[in-house]
Length: 87
Image (cartoon, rainbow, N blue to C red; front, side):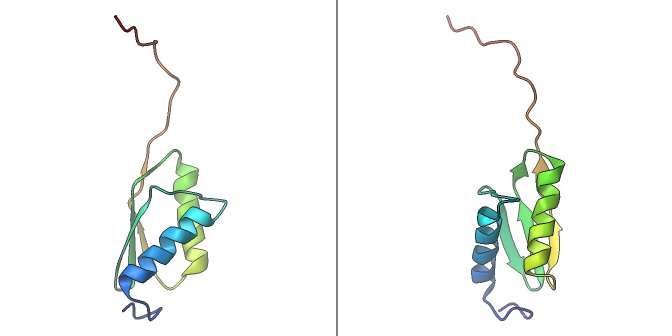
């Protein structure tokens, strides 16, 4: 059980994943959330630094007492290169 929320870690992680998926600022489905005590660990990848920062903001608003560790990678999509030629 999380000391601050009284929830089992797996239920808290599931609830936080749902928050991330449903909030219009984040709407991220590919973020993994794990909980250990009062610590929440995020992993996965997003398309910009702003998206990563929004994850922090959204979760901090919902659970300000938890310690958030955002290990999400920023993978920016660039312009497409040369077209692939299939032979």
